[in-house]
Image 1 (tube, rainbow, N blue to C red):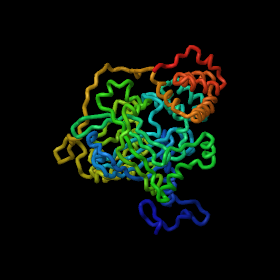
Image 2 (cartoon, one colour):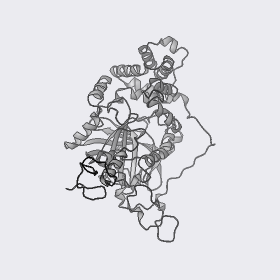
Image 3 (cartoon, one colour):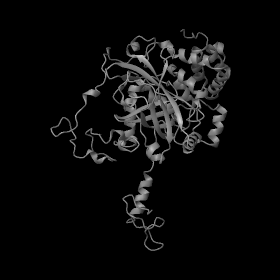
Image 4 (cartoon, rainbow, N blue to C red):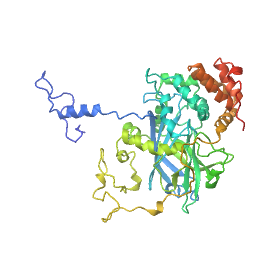
Length: 491
C-alpha cells in the first residue's frame, strides 16, 4: 500500500524534508511537509465544554413489546424490529484527560439511525439533574470547572452554588452515593432524565420517561477504590468497554418507559416536567419496550466518538419535546455547540449522517465548511419554488395543545418539594450506604468554607434530620446551633 498526500498523490519520502543540499534550509515548495504541519496544527478540535471525555460503541435497539398505541415512531412500530445505534458514554464535568473513575455523572447519549432520520436520546446515568432552569446552566458548569484566578478545582465554588440552589439536593445525594462512581460503563443504568411526548397515529399524546437497566447489573466503586483506580488506570472504563466488545461480548440494557396520560400532567401533585424529580414507579410503573445492545467497536476514535454529536432536538415523528425547561434550553444549546465545535455541516460527518434515510436530505441548506454530501446537487435551495423542489409532509405535523399564561419569569411551584425525594432516597439506603454517602460528602464539603458548609447541611437536614445531622457532625459542626430554628419540610 502506497503512502500518499491527502489529495492522493504518492509520497516519495516521508522522513526527509526538501532542502537546499544536505545541510541547507528547507524549501517552502515541500507541499507534503506543509500539509502535514498545517494539519497537525489543527488536529485538535475544541474540547466539549461538558462531556469532554468519552467512549462509545455501535450496536442495535430491538423492540420487544408493542407500543404502537402510544407512538407512531417508525423504529418502534413492530416487535422484533432492529435499529442501528451508536452510544457515547462520558464523564460530565471532567476534562478530556480526566479519570474515568472520577465522582461525576455519566453521560448516556444514544443515536438511533431510523428510516425517518436520526433520533438522539441524550441522557445520563442519573434520573434527575442539579438544576431545572437552563439559565442557571452556565453558572453551574463554571462552578464544576476551574477557578478563574487559580486555575484549580475549588470546593468553595462547587458548594457555594449548590448550597444556594436547594433543588440540587436530590442529584447531590445521588452523586455522593455509591452511584456517583460506577465501576464501568457496562455496569450502570441510563436515563432520559427529561420527559418527552409520544404521539400515536391518531394524534393522541402521552408523556414518557426512558430507563435503560443494565443486564450486567449495577456495580460501583467505593471512594477508596475509585481513587486507587484513577491513579493506576485513569482510562479503565474506556478500556473495559473496548476489550469486552473486542473479545466478543455485548454490553446490554433492557429499555423501559414510564407513561403518564397526557391529561395527568396538569393535575399531578408536583410538576412532572421538573428534571430534579423522578416519577414514583407506584404511580407510573416501568413498561419494557426493548433491548439495547452494543457489539461493535469504533474503527477510529476521533471519527466516531470524538466527532459524534447528539442533540435532544433531533426528534422523529411520533416523539416530541415536553415543557421541561432544561430540555427546552438544550434543544438550542446542543446543536449550537456542535456548529461551533465541528462546523455548520456537522450532520454530514459519517457518524452523524442519517444514512438510513437513504440520501433523502433536502433542506435547502448549502455550502459552508466541510460540505460532504454533494451539496444537494441542483435541487432548488429555496421554498416555495416552481422547479419540483421537495415539499413538506403534512403527515408529520406536530401534536398541538393549548397553553395559557402571562409572560414573565416564574419560579417553579411547590417550594418544599426540593427535599422530599432526596429524603426518600436517603431512607431507602442501607446503613453501610448511608455511611459511605456521609463520608463522601464530608470529604469534599469539608474543603469548603465553614459558612458554606453550614448552608449546605441545612438542605440535607430538611431532606432527613438524620442525614443532615450526620453530615454536620462529620464536618465538626454543632447540629444544635446549625439547625436551630430550621423547620424540616413536611410531606
